[in-house]
Image (tube, rainbow, N blue to C red; front, side):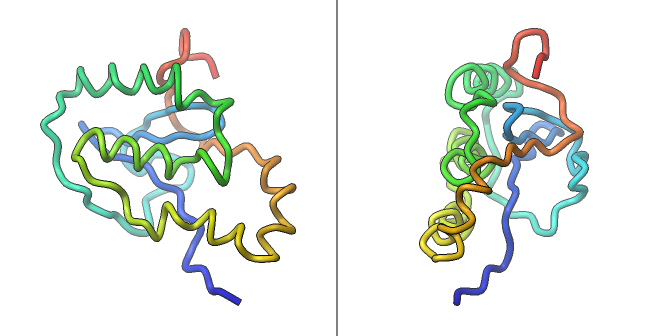
Length: 139
């Protein structure tokens, strides 16, 4: 069978904070500040001219629409979907395809298909973040 290098959790670090998406919606923390700790690797997708104020308005709108917590799906709408979307907004560049293609690669295997019902029931929210785009910071 196919060997997987890892199951990737991604986030975006910009304007001195780390932003990520999970079943609780969009959250932020100091870089490396989730309970997952510092990243195993970092991919530089470039720098941005987008101001912090415009970026936070953009995140708030995403948190009320595309990236509400209840929209989270481990295979089809996850932290990597969020990181890819935000990277394109900030820099015009996507995150690497080996990350975004992983869910479909897993699901294309008999093992992935057998595990899907269990994995679909899992709600993932890396702890340690502050809520963004939710009324009164509610999760």
